[in-house]
Image (cartoon, rainbow, N blue to C red):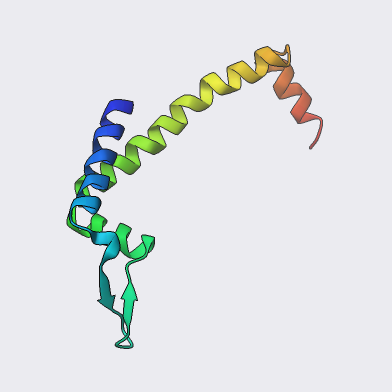
Length: 94
């Protein structure tokens, strides 16, 4: 998963750098020239490459969910608890 996330990220960053999208300007609703900011850039990339940006977001969320379990196990090992003790300890707070 990390390799696909890296490939998609590098592709999008290279696309932005090669086409100089971060140096461009656009005309807003009021008719003023605006420098491209990060929100406009993300919207442009999402509308142009919807599958890649959606897949990248999905992979990032999935990676965070998958890494939360080992981090929780590491926390339990560090505090010398098991899941039952952790659950019982937090149940007393309610």
